Length: 304
Image: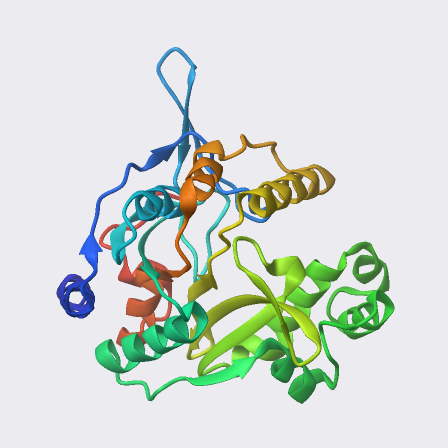
């Protein structure tokens, strides 16, 4: 497995070198963690108990700051950390490949990037591109962008029961239905155009009468491997979304986190039209090697 890790890393570095992308190092401690309500970050303190920041759940904030200062293709390969994550496809510490590229056609170029990566470093065929709406229409006969809360509750009841389903908001219900009905069938697919409630740091656009987040997720063998955005460039809109995330974290009873002002300043300084993708290296290795669990692909087992 160590040899397989090294070989796959070499293949990825060769691919990104051929794309003219510069590999950069970033710190692993940031002043502000991801605002995403579903991500828990490790806090770091000095021996006196004074906060030093947070272990990165993604190098995004640093890479975007570099991109704003010097708009050229860049990527990093390094460690990322997430608290409260363990299981077949998760680990507290893992290796992430993340890349950003200025583009006049960020979404189509991003999807093509993902397809090229699959055929370059795996034995899988070219992934099929399918929209989030198409997934739900084919599986559950509904348009997820226009579904009423009661309709989502009815579909979720068989999985969690009536009371639990009614207690969930629309985003949580969509995540539940996607994970239970759709993800297992995504054997070689790139899912695009997600609900706006899941926009995070992505641009929003109108597609076939729906407002959608211009996101793309790569799935192989039923496993989510990569998540990409046509990047939001509006600092004011990004600040508004940070506020929404903070409110959502409060509603969910999750810890309050500092606002990423450095990222907002980078956007304000003039951020290029671009796309960014984060790929879980260990998950990719798990799929291409046929391993059963993510832990089988790590150089060292995590302490229990």
